[in-house]
Image (cartoon, rainbow, N blue to C red; front, side, top):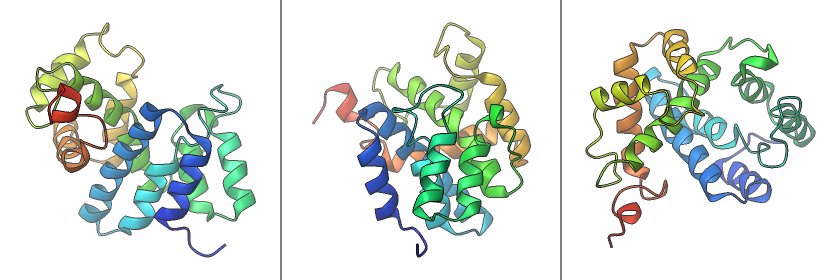
Length: 194
């Protein structure tokens, strides 16, 4: 297979994922990954693709024994590059695959946080990232009843592994997700506006 494109990634995602929320999650991770690629002077398209496909097998194979292994096998069958497949495997701690590239570390750092930021935005009156601030996110992180499916330790560890301050990481990802928030079901669309 030649170098995969975003179109290839989107086709794979839409073939495997019917859940609008899961698709939105992967779009959020893609936005954060693209922003980090620009920041680090890396290949924005490649990093974005990794964010877009990292959970494509989750809807079909949600158990720890299957996800992301089944996705990795499918990517391998399709001839996707090894560094992309390893990053997908490494975003789940239980696989034991080390995050030994900056791309893999960024994927891990952006995965849980992007979901948490979406949850934080959805409970705001405007349901938007526009008014979301780091201090509000940090306060919500302390509330264990809020978005209890999000692992706070993974968020902290992700920033550490990427080598960025946690508050800076939160602010960076909020900013990265703002331009695509309508696609994520946030903002005026989520608040019932035009």
